[in-house]
Image (cartoon, rainbow, N blue to C red; front, side, top):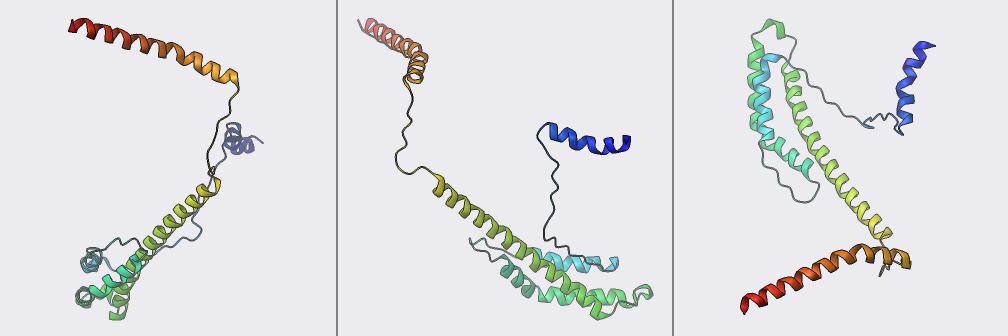
Length: 188
């Protein structure tokens, strides 16, 4: 019984202050993994560097996936050079004899697919932001008051506000009068 109370105590404490624990989970997680021999790291980095240094334009449309696909096409030469260098690096090593040229090609193609998936994710974020803004605008338009809004107050509210501001208004009037008198006295 004691261990049960220890387990439930955080939940009870949170309920007392009007809070409940919230778990946030991604409904559609996407994880990309890439495994390759560490000795070909420089070739992988060269190809990735080529992909990431391409110029992208923010056009106001969801076209980042398309731009990332063009990056893969633009870096075809870097892809071939990196793949060739990685195969040469692994060719003379007995511990990596199980990596065929097709396996190395798949590593670099996988890097390209990850790059395109990042562009698609940017498109999803962009369209989500646009949809959210559109929904917020529609909700505002649906709920905003139409026409002139009048605030009706009873006489006691008006009198209370008048009483509260009367002293300040009277003091400001006295200051202006005094400043005028001083200004006219200085001119004489």
